[in-house]
Length: 435
Image (cartoon, rainbow, N blue to C red; front, side, top):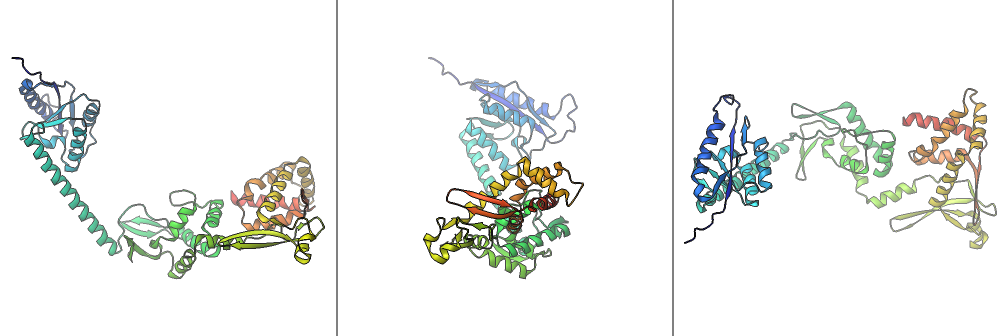
């Protein structure tokens, strides 16, 4: 009769000791554990067990964590399919945490690995061992859920009392003795942001202005629109603690008074599209009083609305007075004509003859100014333009441009003779402010 062929099972011994005391001895606790485990593996030779000679020892490591070098090497070998059975002296040598124990068993099951405790009636190669494992895992799940409930209840009770429960301190506060303390310098920035939002009504515009001014968050990051919305909706600034959508009086001092908070949230209550349309309607027309058509008639800024959208135009006065046929160019989109003018200005400032002419004009104001100073100032126009407030952009255009004549296929810009020399001083001032 042919004997059944036994499957070879590669058994790896894992040992652990929490403290380093006694590890320097010739025969220490790790050696004793290994000796018992190797004897057990030898007793299972008839079942096809064979000892893996690699040592997986963790001397001086707690069983409350999985961050152990010997255990990590063991798990890596399991992942590589080099181990079939893990043998330990006691279950707590593998882990003292039921939650970590469940994680290890999950790894073992995924790779078809069983484990055995030689001093306890626990062997997952048997049905009784698997039943014991399921019981332990059920208790582990129960322990995790009870612990989580206790933590949630504690956090909820603490928040209702207005206590700070840890984490990153909000911008405007520091944490001291587990309490929020107002940071005077940061609090001034927070109040400034709330006040300026009331004035501008636009988070997009305000974020752009704050980035241009170099304002950064508590973590040193530039302020964007998302950061602004989180900040403007954070009730911690009015002295409240929030838990699951409900607010409670906090232990910390408020940075924003209720009046300012209500003004901000009255604006936020409007739809973003409506606020954006209002912001665009308040944007100064860059070419007001400067734009003229083919017959010399002036163009005036106007706008129309379709739903929540606002469309800006420049329309000919001749058309308004005498009808559509009075001018071949009846009206032009404001954004397109303004962009075309700005693009031509940028190109003009790079021309050598403009640089020289501006330098000569500037010498009349400041004899010490050099051609290089003028060139550098004019080169600053490009990067600084998009960072200027709309009112500042309009003022600069009025300073530089004397007249813009628009035809059916052409655009002609006439610059002010003294405008460029004044621009050198203006742009130099903006550059110093931005720096």
